[in-house]
Length: 152
Image (cartoon, rainbow, N blue to C red; front, side, top):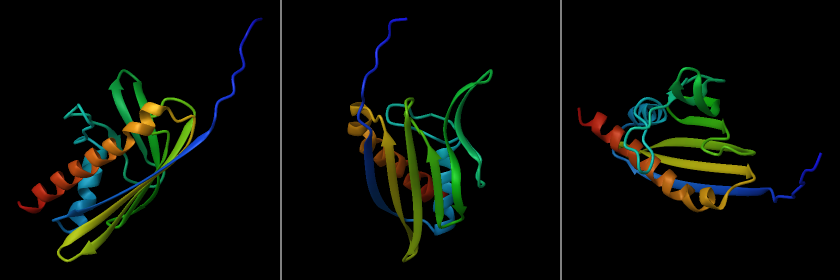
């Protein structure tokens, strides 16, 4: 049986992003859950709903109906309203593993949110180059949700 064996380089990725949110800690944490779940969006798509189960071992996945979808990760740590950690392949449909941490701290009357994404695997150039744009979009969406909820 003819076949091919190729060597590919396992790579790592480390991204850290931080923002200030003009909303209390608990509102900001709930905004993260909304963005990870039914209120989700990604660059180029204003509506990208996901399923997110906010408990240890909970799944984060895209449900396309009829048992079709894409598993993005599993909740590793959840300590509302200060910490959420998810591990899984996220948006990478190839051999890769990610760890994402959302760490929230109270700052004045608002929230400081630090996001850290670390990954290892056969990370594509497209994902390596676009990951900061994606996370910047994610954080701005969280800020928008939290600040709109806080004004109510």
